[in-house]
Amino acid sequence: MRNLTDRVAVVTGAASGIGRALSLELAKRGCHLAITDRTTAPLSPVADQIRQMGRRVSTHGFDVSDRTAWPRFISELTAAHSAAHLLVNNAGVSLTGPFASCSIDDIDWQIKVNLWGVVYGCHFLMPMLRAQEEAHIVNISSIFGIISVPESAAYCMSKHAVRSLSESLEMELWDSSIRVSSVHPGAVATRIVEDGRYRAGGYVGEEESKKLIARGIAPSEAAIIVADGIQRDQRRILVGRDAAWLARMQRWMPVWYRNLVALWHRRNRSDAAFAGTKGTPDVSDP
Image 1 (cartoon, rainbow, N blue to C red):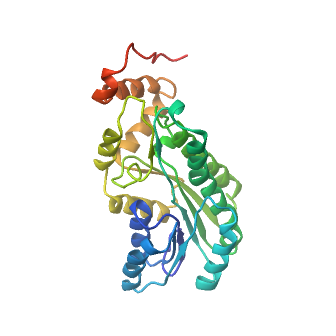
Image 2: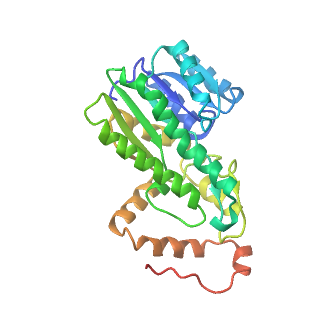
Image 3: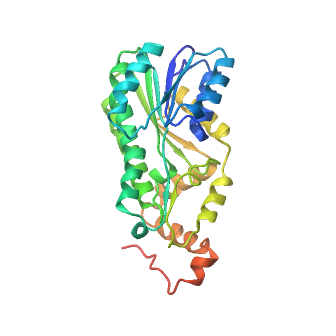
């Protein structure tokens, strides 16, 4: 989508992190916004900044994992803007911890938000996007949608599925007016781990996970990379040097990269987990 001036962008999970930063960046580039989050209250400061740029903005509070809420949102969107040209499925949550420590309810929550929220967004917005001369779907996956890591099984599963959905849609819509991008951030300094769910029992502790994310790039920097990718019609957008390096590693060593990830994981385990762990996990490939 080369021209963003006076286009209407829908951004889910826009109250904080990448969603907030990307909403502001798109407004700077000429977009009007429909921004969503679970409730409208935290969207107010974002909306105020967008209005100060001279853009129209509407705020919508609903749970993206609630299928029944989407038709109501489409009605509100139509009333506020009449059209939508750009959809950014950004809303997502984090579940960290060994698979065996995570409950089925934990995993269900992870998949409903991270995957079904994206599926619903694509499905319910598709008719409106098809009606435009130019439109774009942007699905926020993760570098963990390209590689897999321990203690994030459900998260990796959801993000791999988002990438797969994006690639399938891209091929289906090849000869249409809609372009599709999957976005794969590395570490970005957001609250996703802090606001997510953590289940103990693994090598890496909760504080270590938070520190790793805190060392990432700023959301505003990530937003510029994503917005540039949208305007270049990039099909895959890698965000951060770590994401670019890990994507290359997976491409060069599609099986053996798991050894390196497992070794890094062991060396970065928390002292508490280290003290209580006996033996050495098998990191050889089958």
